[in-house]
Length: 613
Image (cartoon, rainbow, N blue to C red; front, side, top):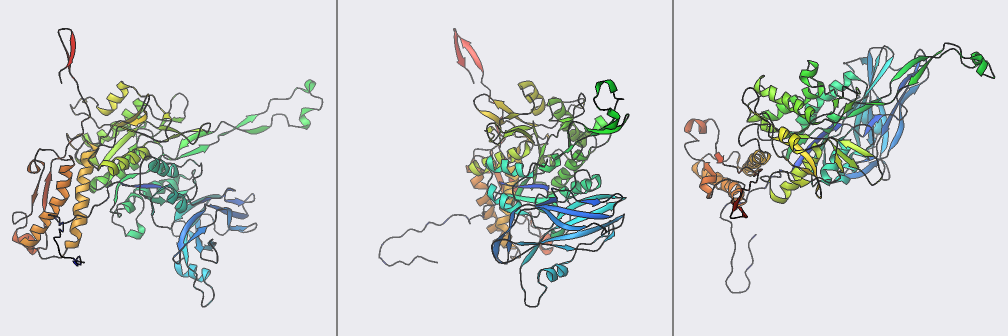
């Protein structure tokens, strides 16, 4: 709309020399974790009787908010929600499964009503959840009723030879969170149950993040090996499936603004309480006022609970230590392979997992030797197995060691994986100065220490490894280490690539920014006539993307022509390409690498120390 000139005079209208470019965000991180809103009951679901003659199925539901009928309502926190129970019947036979749909329905007032709709039992693997028509009939049974509702989750119970398995399948879409409170509204208050999704999102926002997407996958019982393997598979997802069926990383790849990903619940834990049987020694009658045989039979066998042992849900034994690929490494490999396919789109943030301690048999946070072992597996993928080109390995970055956090003074100290904190620093630096600045040399917030000692020797060995027998240096591990007076700092910004330039995280992210910004700017031009006029327009748009990067110092060179080039003419758009409906614009950029080692040369001249360089 033009300006209404009502007073005679001279007016100035500033017009940009290039078309304005849509700025695509590159600071948004996606998280994948186990479903936290619905889980097994505080009183665990079980088959009752011995032998089993009945059942008591329970579920805990966190308090969270939903949008129903255009209004935001609260799903009330419910412990031990009665899913199904009966003292003298069991809804499925051995080898069968049954699905219950958990529904939140609109009602008068701010709270939603929770309903459970039961499906039909069927052989495991063929069971089906109640369809939407059944849910609609349950929520609105009378003609004229129009209550809004949403399927919260499907709860699957599986019966195997008297044992019971329970799995929660999330039914809600990935949630966008612009701050920590958004996460609490969408998923409820985190519980101390061995998972890391809630603490990872909190660490991300505490360290500078401003937006993230959270995608959840199935949540089985933590002793159910079969369902845990399925949960691992869902963390990666299946490429090419429809949006409604996409899970984990595959779902996040459908969100254009997500440029980095962390899977914190790959490191989730469970607590095992081992029980051993002890045979009581024969009693000594002389020492008893009452014959001990009257209280405890001589030679009785009793169960004694041992000390609790914390174990990871997904085994992290190194590849060549156990002779087979560990489940956790297999999942990291699958995630990285998917990110490699997208080339510049997604940066996968990885953490060295907890490792078994040979002396105690327990899993403990990894030390420097374990970190070298773990990163060596990724080197093996490239150098021996042909997993990917070293350029493509820039799709991932590895972080170590684990960190110590504390809610407040006097509260317990918790050990957490480091990747979420790196994600927060990445977003903080991106928002403050852009994607071309290394996400490093920043103090971590809500961190009180590191779980493994870090010195210069360990840092150097992990960050700048020496070449191996093949003469090729391995991938780098980004180290977090404490500095007196500064706290714990993220002091590394390298990818898993060993390429001279793409080994740097900021170089990799500048390419991501160029791709996303060009895509956002060119989308309105799809189906435009492929003529020289379009070529000129697109070249102008490309300059609008690249010139600000050059002026910000992100690109190398003293002049724009030394920093980038744009080719959009007949040389890249020949007649046969135009006839096929293709339009091509070619960009070349020279991205500036970060100055990691600042070197000063000192000399002495006539007894005076001078700085030479």
